Image 1 (cartoon, rainbow, N blue to C red):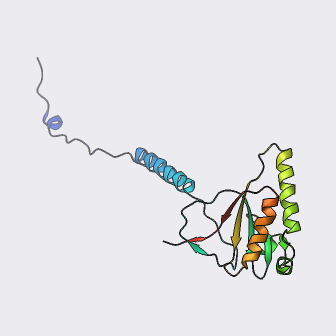
Image 2 (cartoon, rainbow, N blue to C red):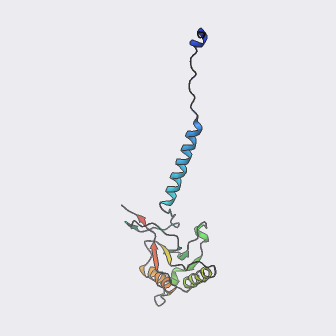
Image 3 (cartoon, rainbow, N blue to C red):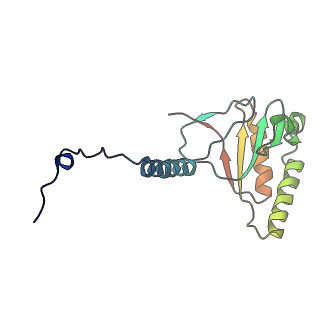
Length: 167
């Protein structure tokens, strides 16, 4: 014979269900990591050299990882090395060197490229074929042509120019 439940058991209210935030935090962490990863893979952010006015363009191509040189009217030609302050960047050629009209090849740049090509060959890395040029708007076109001619002589075939995207 079954006994009827007591009054105390009948009137006992169920406790409120508590929500565990652990699952929610795990889900948000995974979403955050996914978004950060997809953002960093969608393009490369580049900080322009100090005091440089980049030209504007409507190009849609993303930057590739390559050797980068900086051309500035007052400072000449420099090799861009990430993490080094602008003042400590190695100068390859002065504005006076670049202004010489008879000289089409920049010797210091040619030597640097050839040294890098040889070191890549010694390390079994494919030869470098890309160069990125970061040139100020005020740089004479002849300086850019000298850089391209010098790099072409050293087996560089693809040139990218850093620009500011305009819509």
